[in-house]
Length: 282
Image 1 (cartoon, rainbow, N blue to C red):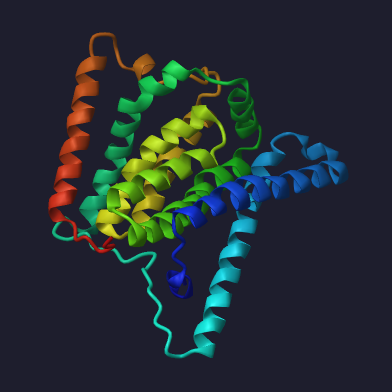
Image 2 (image 1 turned 180 degrees about the vertical axis):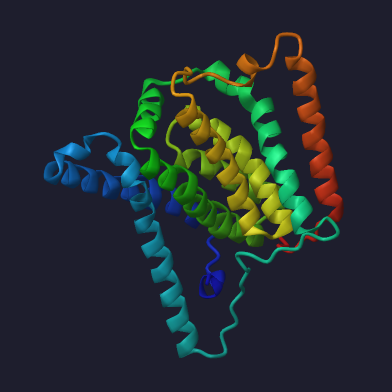
C-alpha cells in the first residue's frame, strides 16, 4: 500500500515543514473552517465537533506528500537512469523473539511506561481544555472511540514513524532521528500537558520501530495507550482528570511498583535489543 511512498524521504527541515506548516497551521485551519461550517449548518453538533473533524488536520500534509511523490515519479519517468533511494514503511523483523511474544510484551510495557512517566504529568497539572475534552468524549463515546483510539494511532504513527522517523533514519543517526521525530510528535499535540508525555512515549515507540521495522508495532502501542485512557474516561467519568496510578496503588506499595515497572521496561528493551533485527539502517 505504501510502496510508491517509500521513496519519499524528507530531511529534517522538510519534516519540520510538514509538522509545523502543513499539519499544525494548514491542517489546523482546515479543521477549524470545517468546524465553523458544520456548526453553522448543524448547531446541534456544538458538543465535541473537534473530535469529529480531527482527521482533517492531516489532509494538507497528505496532499503535499502525494504531490512530492508524483513529481518525483515524473522526474524518474523522464530520466530512466535516475536511481532513487527508498525505505519500506513496514518491514518487520522480530528476530528470535517473534511477533507473538513481542505483542504480548508491548501491553504491559505501555502500562509500565505510563506509570514511570506519570509524576511528570502530575507535576504539570491538568488544563481546563483537557477537562472539557474528557467531558466531550463521554458525551460522544462512539465518535470519540473512532477518533481517539482508531484514527489517532493510525494517522499519527503513519506520519511520525512511517514518514518522518523512517526518513530521518536515512539522513542522520538513529539517536538523532528518534529524538527529533519524538519532538515533532510532541509539537503536534500543540499543548505542553500532552506534548511532553507524547515526546516521552514517542522515544519508546520510535526505538521499537527502528529496531523491529514494524509500523504495526508502533500503531499497536499507540492504540493501547489511547485505548486505556479512553476506557478509563468512559467507564469512570466521575474520576478527576488528574487521577492516576498513584491514586490507585495502596500507600506503601507505590515505590516498589514504580521500581518494578522501571526494571521491567529496562529488561524488555534489553530483550528486544538482543533479539530483534535492525531492518531500518541509518
